[in-house]
Image (cartoon, rainbow, N blue to C red; front, side, top):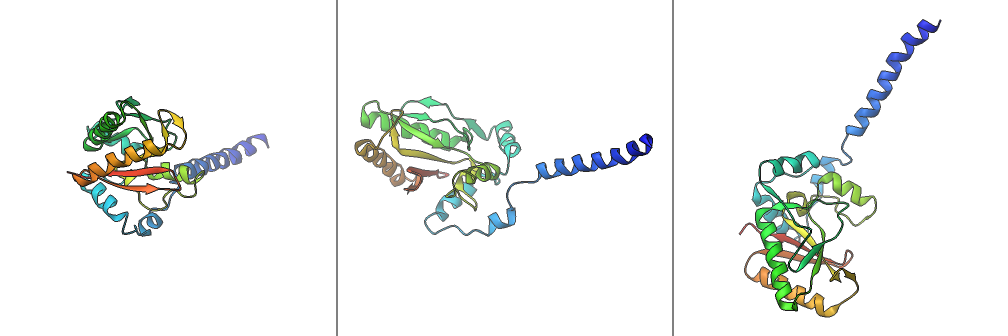
Length: 206
């Protein structure tokens, strides 16, 4: 009787754990639903710019690692002149070369304009799986494709300067002045996201 129980149990246990493992491997998003979401006219230029860098839609950590491995994505320093990066729970500190350089230049110009102050980068490159995790804590996170999914977008908080979370209209105005300069010379697009208290910035393939 004991032998018979073992014969029955082993296939059952194998099938159970195989089923559980399969469930864990399934993505947390429905790609068909993601692709159905239409971008707003304001946001469409951001997506067009993102798709011009030759980076395929980032779905998971492996897709990011692929572009790190082939040299397409570059590590972003946690701190540099004019900016700091806050702890990233739902994005990754890698971007395409032009985005990295543009962020650094924005930081340098902001530092010069404000005589040494810093702004805070709150988000960088995200995969579709990162967005799933983010939506669990933030219902405003994108359901469709985001320009963050291509490695050329980042967010800058307009309520955190010099590592202090506090409304600072003078610093906010200085930051927006710098962003407008980079829009004017064809380097970026940006949107002020009031629900997230940040500027969403997409670097163009100039």
